[in-house]
Every structure is written in structure tokens, then in C-alpha cells.
Image (cartoon, rainbow, N blue to C red; front, side):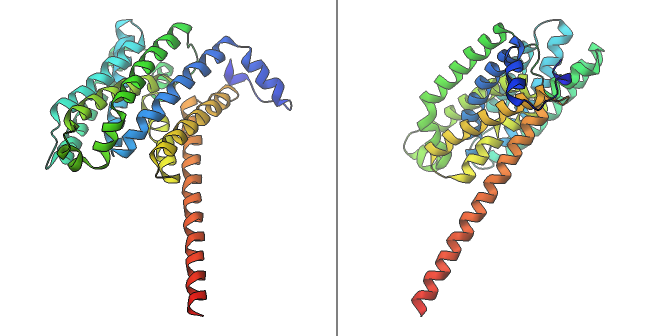
Length: 300
């Protein structure tokens, strides 16, 4: 078992042994697909300041998976059904315009409370082992099959294709919604579609990180990238790079330790965010130092 696979002095041999396991190869394939999808969609989540919505939608995966286990079907059906359903409810009931953000926040809180209550209900009805609940909340890379990878790849392809089609107008509507509306951009329709795509993305990420730690891939890599650069193209690419890095290192760390993958992915993602803030501080400090030097030379 991965929990018993400790590191030795020969790191290359350890990695080679890990790659000989089909379960780890499948885990890396699934993790790569999920990381790319989460980075792209998460970049727009951070830009649009909808992290609370993303958190609520991801939490909906917990009761969904618990209900699926209780009914004896694949947990994937529960993840996708409840995450997309929660996103659709928020998208359908929230209104844009004056007071729209406050109403969306209130509605999001209501949906979050209800989904968590449903999750505990299904767990009580299931009466299963606590370890099963832990995997739903904090993630697991064990048991990923080629069939699971095919489903993840198909959903990711559809979501990424949709994001490619709506990406430019969605970016315009996210940066300057008033001007976008004046130019005839269908901001309301784009928002509805984006929330549904967010639901599908959260369902995918939940199957790797668990419902509670979706932020590790959906928000932190994108937030880190946007702290480094404000240019959309560069920050989007950096978001993908950070998401892949924390996922790959998280899978390796989880294999060689007894701790869940969600913990490692969250830890690495948070570390990248702290480093990005440190980088920004250094850049601002050096810039301020140059300005002071120029002013001093000018005065003298």
C-alpha cells in the first residue's frame, strides 16, 4: 500500500518503483487532466471573484457522492449530478444588476448549508465506514481506473472547448461588465453557462482532492498566477503550470506517506501562493528603492 511505501536513499529507484504500479500511472493521468481543467476554469473564478460560489459548488459534491454510495452506484454520478445541480440553482435564481452580488452571496450560503445537511443525512443513512467519508471529503488517488480517466478526459474536453468558445467575451464581461453590456455582450447568459461549467469542473476536481479541498486546485494556482502577473495570457499559462506542479508533487508525496493527497496538494499550493506574495513584495521593494534613488539623484 502507498502508506507503507517510504522513501529510501535512492530516490530514482523509489520513483521507478512507483511508476511500475498501474494505479499510480492512472492517478497521474487523472490528476493531470483535472489540474489543467481546474487551472483554466479557476482562473476565471478568481478573476470574477466567485470563489464563494466555487466553494459551495464543490461542497455539493459531498452529498452527491454520499448519495451515490448509498444508492449503490458510482460516486462520479453523485459528484457531477449535485455539483452541476447546485451551480444551476445558483445561476437560475441569482439576479444581476443592483444588489446582485449580495443576493448571490446569500443564495450561495443557503445552498451550501442545505447541501452539507444533505451530506450528513446520506452518511447517516449509509452507516458505512468513516474511511469512506474521509475519502469523499479529503480525496484519494487509489482506485482510479482507465474508465474513470476516460470519463474525466471527455468531460474536460467538453468544458475546455466551451471555455475556448466563450473565453474572450467572458473575459470582457468579467473585467468591465458595464461596457460589455453596452457593447451587446450577453453577460447574463455567459454567467449562467460559466456556472454550469464550474459545476462540472468542481465535480472532476472533487474526485481527486475531495470536496473540502477543491480550492487547492480551483483557486490557489490561479490566485498565485494573478499575483505574479496581471497579463491574462501569461497568468493563465502560469495557473496551469502551478496546478500541474502541485498535483504531480502531491501525488508523489501522498504515495510515499500515510497522509491523504488533499493535504499535500493544499500544502504545496499554499506554499506557491506564499512565495508569489514574497516575490511581489520584493519586486515592489526594489521598485520603490529605484524611485527613491532617482529622486535623490534628481534633487542633488
